[in-house]
Image 1: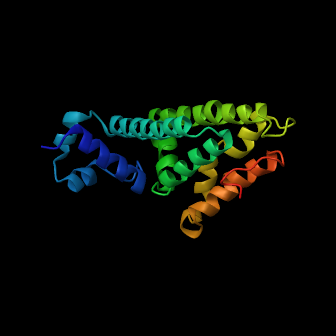
Image 2 (image 1 turned 90 degrees about the vertical axis):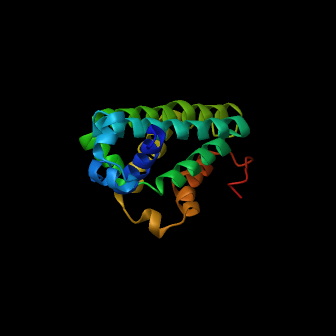
Length: 196
């Protein structure tokens, strides 16, 4: 008998790889070698399973962020490491996963959207403000606007072109999405491992 955790792990991997709408409960049952009836013992609907999968993905990423924040003292290095982890995760996501949440699973999309907003406007913006207070970032930079322009909805930009992750390396994407923008607002005296 499969455990709820094993079912959830397989669901997360399948939904992110094939899309939450496209990957069916029949396919999930076949992948796990169980009946759909077994799946419905744990979850009342596919939507409930999708929501739980997104909650689990979000919580796993929050744990990674907390480790970065605990281990790294430099605020800009924290931001870069957070986005580096994000790119590592997004490489395994089919673009239709996020777009499918928005269109077909509003509750799951709401979980994802709340998480994304929290990361950008709480975690990232606070790190930017901390860097500005430490004279790492120029004083005339509006952190709210910077977040709106460069970090808000970056996953949608990354997924608009399906080939970005297959055409360019993670390092190139990280440089162009994050590092070069942070370099542009940093004071000339500042450097870190990623800037060199």
